Length: 436
Image (cartoon, rainbow, N blue to C red; front, top):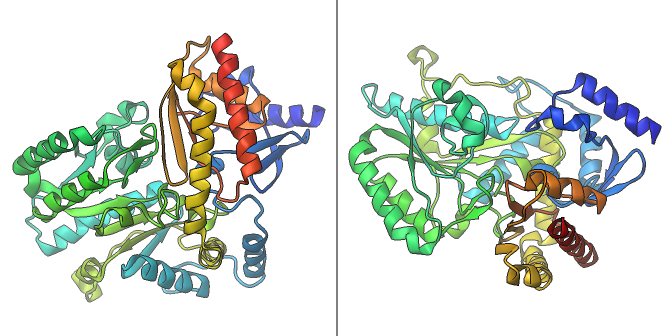
């Protein structure tokens, strides 16, 4: 107990945590984690917490996965890292080939986190238009309302979550926003709004960026594949690039390997991160087509090179983990297994939450693949998201609500018994908060 408390105190003295109001932790200590296994995190007092959000949506096959860990150990004995300019390594060549084969795309460009991947896509789209026509008016980007694409300046520019964006508005790129349909009845109105916007600004827009089917940070909003397909076709008519941000939705999370596969359309740029390395190491990849790549392919003197880099681009250890992750997908028929697993989880939630739905405490229970969400309407002394987070920890559950939206995005290895335990704990949390 004392060691845990000492670590927490040292943490507060020296660390500034992400997406946190640090003052709240003066009375609510940070939890140092000693080890992890499967879906569980363990603190230094041996308390176990079910990681029901996959440590910010990155962990696919459990913590300390035996196969991924072994592949990482094998790699570290040979090569830990090498610069990717003029050099390469086998893990990244293998990974690039596999990603291109999975997506039907042609080239991979690497970074080490999701926001950086978005920045690369925005720059590359603008640059490609510029190389094609140096008098091009295409200097704007287009995104959906309620969208989120990261927290660096370019990524913030094309997002629409005010909590993250508003303070930095004077620093941001010029971006246009078109309404995402809240439900299927709004598809036609949303498409008409997009048509009007394109009629006015279509010749000025570089790229349309969207999170296919699921706006994760936008309170887990699920929207129609029919809308997205039509929106993409409208943008294509104006020679607007399509960027799909699958940083959170990729690698099986929405029920298919990539969410865009459910839409019957392909992007010009595909952004991948989070689950790409199974939750082990930072890595992101931007995929594109030779049509884009060839615009930059020229003698150096023509000044057409895409001069963007990160020191740890394409790290060999991260790529080894990514290849191991793809191995598991291939060997264990994960996508098909997840269909049955997601059905079990959703049924368990429907049954357990039914009384709370009837009491109008819970509404809009929904799921897409291995993502589950619902809204909660309760009055609590402190903000609801913090109250749920704190109460969940006492039940051995890691939940991190988005405003009044509670969501589950568990690792794919969660068992039926663990699901039952998690759902029972979730109901206990809401019942206790309801009583005040």
